[in-house]
Length: 271
Image (tube, rainbow, N blue to C red; front, top):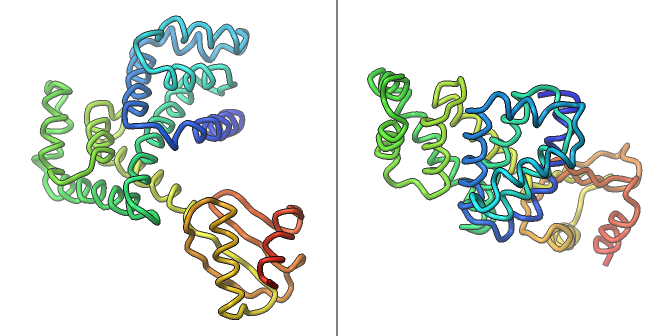
């Protein structure tokens, strides 16, 4: 996904983030349900990615189609998604899959402190990949075109008996609706989304000179307060750094251009 579609996905993920603190797995399930409808209806996909149609018109169409069939949050998420611009009909489906998986991943994230929930989810998904990859019989069974989606889903879940709810949902989605991929390849894609979300818990900090223990503790407290979670701090010394401090958390960079936030962090460092 590139260009305008990539920009639209980034905007959609930002909008989704506001819903995630209170969302349950039902949001992910509803988004996957809408994805199934889009994947099964080429005409609808074309209508929702037609550049000649206004975004409001597309949003109204999906609101009408899914009213009462999915939650209000899911309907609003899809309405926002289709109002954006997409390079191809395939891209909007891929974006919706990413949003649904992200919603499930965020549920696992809240289940344990300091990203432990994400680590558990990642291990559950990797465990499924390892089991399936070790058996040609399992690979054939999960790829069998004559087998029903329910049968494949039931088989897949027996291969991850101790997995958490988010992992079970993502594994079942991968085997019942792989969307042209091998089930393990789609699970691997979900693992990559987990890894990306884990970066939200890591702050890579560059400073002009080594920090004392007291300064490090103040930095830790300041960043935790700024981001609202207990971050893992990695510090690198760079004497050539302009501005004194640079912080990277996930996709966000706080450097000399973000004067207010940096001033607050520097104030905490010096006490």
